[in-house]
Image: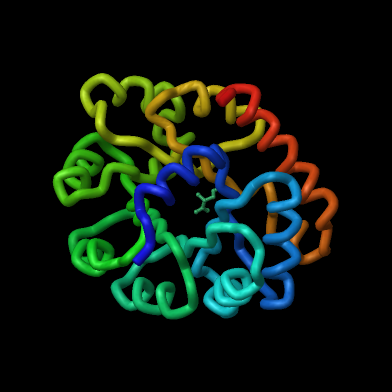
Length: 216
Ligand code: 3PG
């Protein structure tokens, strides 16, 4: 059984979560290593490609010191598949009622997607206190999360969707942001081209920013 509180601490310490769309299984470990070399060790692999589950299994079995999760969980069977292939945490883009019982039974951290305060509070009532704010930028970005901090003080957010390096400081300065997610750190194009050095550089830049904005 995973220590969910420890995973929440890892998420906050990471500050940034690369969102990965992987088209070839053989790219999974090199991209995970490139990101870990740059200091980012919490990785979300989206279940949007035929090899996504295999990619999760490869990363999970690689011995790399990373936390690998499955994203784009959109149906109940995704939860069991993700667990079977070694996903340590789950992320959903949205959280309709039909997903709730499967998500609640997952033995690791679950970061369910929300876009409104009502959805956030409803999920909190179901026991989820870290939620993904998606799509973050179209739904008002950091200023929306700042506005939610007073009425929803016990909920932390992972904003994802339209987040860039330039926008990171506005999110990381908010106490109710656990971490920000985004695909800019390892784009599908950079993964396909095997641009591992560039991915490490982008990860390092983001992880340095996290350290400078959240010292200690
Ligand atoms: C996604 O699920 O696609 C993520 O939210 C990534 O969004 P981004 O590509 O805008 O970073």
